[in-house]
Image (cartoon, rainbow, N blue to C red; front, side, top):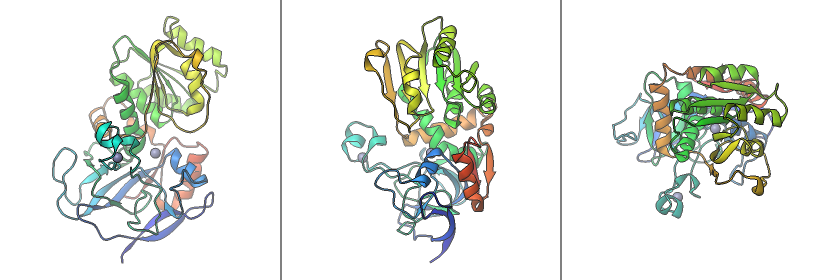
Amino acid sequence: MDTCRAAVITEHNKPLTIQRVPIPKLDPGSLLVKITASTLCGTDVHRWHGPLGDGDTLPIITGHEPCGLIEEIAGQRADILGNPVKRGDRIVWSYVACGSCYYCAVALQPCICPGRASWGHNRSDQHPYLLGSCAEYMYVPKECLIIKVPEEVTSASAAASACAYRTVMHGFDRLGAIKSHETVVIQGSGPLGNFATAVARDHGAKKVLVIGAPANRLEVTKRMGADAVLNLEEVTEEKDRRRWVRDHTEGRGADIVIQVANNLAVPEGLTLVRGGGRYLNIGAGGKANIAVERLPQEMLFITVRSAEPRHWLQAIDFLASRKKIFPFEEMISKSYSLEQINEAMQAMASYAVVKAVINLQ
Ligand SMILES: [Zn+2]
Ligand SMILES: [Zn+2]
C-alpha cells in the first residue's frame, strides 16, 4: 500500500509528528486530492490541546481547511455547478450531511445533522486514513460537493474559505439583507472578522465599525473596508466602547452586531445592538451568561454552525470576484512547510499570527 506524509497528533499537547499514513483505495465516486495548501484554525489548536467531544480519539491528522489538485477520481464526477471535473483541477470540497434525517430532509438545516462528517478529527489509523488537511494527500468521500477554485484565488485563500470564510457567508445568509441605512458593528478582527468586514461593506452597509486587537490586525481590518476601528487594548472600559458605538449611531446602537471573537464577547455585544436590531453570533468557544431581561426589545439573535455546500461556493466566488476591491491575501499572515507544523501550531496558539498556512506546493 502506498503512503504519504502527514502531520499527526499522537498525544495531546505534545509535538505533532510527521508520519507516513496509508493512501486508501478509492470507493466509487470518491477522489484523491494532492493538497496544495492547508490553513490552520483555532479549532486545530484546541483539538491539539485536548479532545473536542467524544469523537476525538488519537491519532489524528490535524487540519480541516484544505485546497488541492485532483490526483485521481473513481468514476465520473461533476462540481457543484454541474461541470465535469478532471485530474489536475484545483478544488475545495464540502462537509457531508446524511441527507435523510429530520434536520437534512424536513428542516433543511443540514449543518446540525447529527450524522454530519467533517475533517481534522478522524483517526489516521483507520480507513480511509486521510481525512485531515495537513498531509500530502486527502481522501474526498463521494458525498462531498466539489467547488472548483478559479485561477485568481490563491490556494491559501481557498483553503481559508473551507472554514472561516464559508462560515461567514453562512452567517450573512441567515442574517438576511443589510439595508443601505444600516450600521454594522463587528466584534473581532481575526480572519472571520476581517472577512465579515469585507462582506458587510460589499452587502451595502452604511457604516462598518470594528472592535478588535491588536493594532496590526486592525490595519488589515481598515483595508478590508472598515469605516472605523476601536482597539480593545487601548479602550479597555466596556462603557467607553459602548459610547463609541452610540456616538456613531446617533445614540441608538448598531442595527446589526456580528460576533466573530468568542462567546465572552456576547454580553457586551448585546448592549451594542439597538432595539429591534439583529445579533449574529458566529465565534465559538468560551462561556458567558446573558441577562435575558436586559436584552434590547424585539431584537433577533441568530447563531450559525459551519456552513452548507453553497456557502463554500459563495466564499470562493467572493474571493475571486472582489479580488481587486479587498486585499484578501493580507489575512494569511505566515507560510510554513509541513515539517514546520509545530512552529505553525505554536504561532497560532500564541496569536503570533492571524492565520498560518501550511504550504505543500
Ligand atoms: Zn476552522
Ligand atoms: Zn442529516
